[in-house]
Image (cartoon, rainbow, N blue to C red):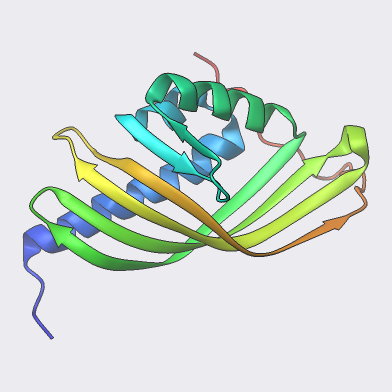
Length: 158
């Protein structure tokens, strides 16, 4: 096994920050953040040929997808670095995502992984290509949020 340099460790931390920022962007419904996490020509592949390409189209995708839910909670973990070097990276990160749609009285639980290709664009690592691969889903009935809890804001203040 090759020892990692300080530059390798910094790159890995910055890449992990990008992956975590995506979860925060979805959960807070921060479309500007989500769009900025992707390269200008970035792609998002849901599988079965369902690919969205380009930052403008991705903004529309994120706006529509995050607008369906009362609340979401995305958890990204177990980041594996398949390649980091020459300003590019490939990762696999595991995800669990909870979606509450109180209007339809349902919770959607999804688990699987993100397969990402990233590029270092100087100011931050951005996702060039993301594939979502799902291991399982479960839909359950929605339940009201107990009064003792307060939801976080899904519409960031500008």
